[in-house]
Image (cartoon, rainbow over all chains, first blue to last red; front, side, top):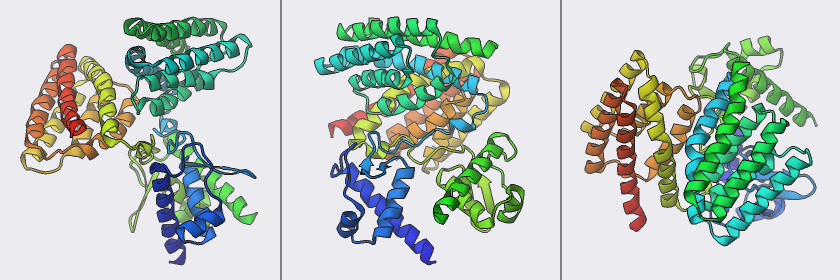
Amino acid sequence: MDLNGKTRLSDSVARNITSLIIGGQYKQGAKIPNETELSEKLNVSRSTIREAVKTLASQNVLEIRRGCGTFVCDNPGIAEDPLGFRFINDKVKLAFDLLEIRLVLEPHIAQKAAERAVDEEIKQISAQCAEVEKLILSGSRYEEEDVLFHIKIAQAAKNVVIPNLIPVINSTIFILMEITNTALREETILTHRAIAKAIENHDGEAARNAMIEHIMHNQRFVEKLKGS
Amino acid sequence: MDLNGKTRLSDSVARNITSLIIGGQYKQGAKIPNETELSEKLNVSRSTIREAVKTLASQNVLEIRRGCGTFVCDNPGIAEDPLGFRFINDKVKLAFDLLEIRLVLEPHIAQKAAERAVDEEIKQISAQCAEVEKLILSGSRYEEEDVLFHIKIAQAAKNVVIPNLIPVINSTIFILMEITNTALREETILTHRAIAKAIENHDGEAARNAMIEHIMHNQRFVEKLKGS
């Protein structure tokens, strides 16, 4: 009974902290007050605060950095594997179907980005394109920066949902793809460049087509896995 | 230290149970063995099992039904608000952008469903269409059955991701929509019927167009909210 009461209290405190984040009092990526300060502010015990922070950390709302403090996540509230992909057994089919969704969504997003991007966004997209290229040419892994390239395009398209959706879709695909493959690396450089260039020129149709080419190319790689 | 050790053990037991579900030993929607049986099977204490089950319940993998037992969820692993929509402040913009995504995705899905649906799926889609209609005509809330109509279409399209994605996108839109609005109800009946009919006729283009009409209509409703 006591334990249940405590759990419920910490859940309600977790909701309070969430409201403070949504209300903008604690910004995304910023450090939040320590346990003692929060316990005074919200008028509950430190152990209740600790429990609430743990709950929010498990929901990817907060990040506890040892010896450093507790921070609001950059994209708060996106669970690990939020759409339950681990319960889909056929991973090749999963990757193929994720690419089918990307092939429907992202050309549209690229087109909107070309139509709506402001100068600062164009600069960021080009810089991110160069960053991915640098990693590829140095033989490093580039998945994270690649996803960021697609996120920056989605942000320029001004749809608030897509930047949250892209990492979920893309990270799962990367698990399956042999990104060390030389051919894929070269094609990625060329098609990324074409996408960035089209957005810079505010050419919606060219951006759409370059994105189609980019995703089709990825699809061909997964297609090979299907056959194997 | 002891507490940490225990937490880690229950996490590893939670992963074991997850593997049993993925492996098909415990089916989606089915009841799993009770605490005592699981504790014997996995060779850990009942309190560790209880902890693991609680973790999996918080991840929407298991559902604890009081006095009834513990069950695997129908769509395991899809968290509540998995994409962190609660952190997007402008809910009208959110609904509008979700509809933008639906307008890109779902016509494609409807077309694929028309091309790929087998007889049993067509029967289910028609039955679900009739079910939504019955609720609308009796003046009841119909959101859940409406989402299920779209899920059944997605299933017929044979993409394993879309059925997991549709509820996330649609449930959030419903929060904003005034589904008691008579005009919306009538249009929903007509456009749902057109979609179901086109799938039944394996007419991909008609299914695509009917879905566009359906979503455009919803979009007009949210557009009004934007203005207000």
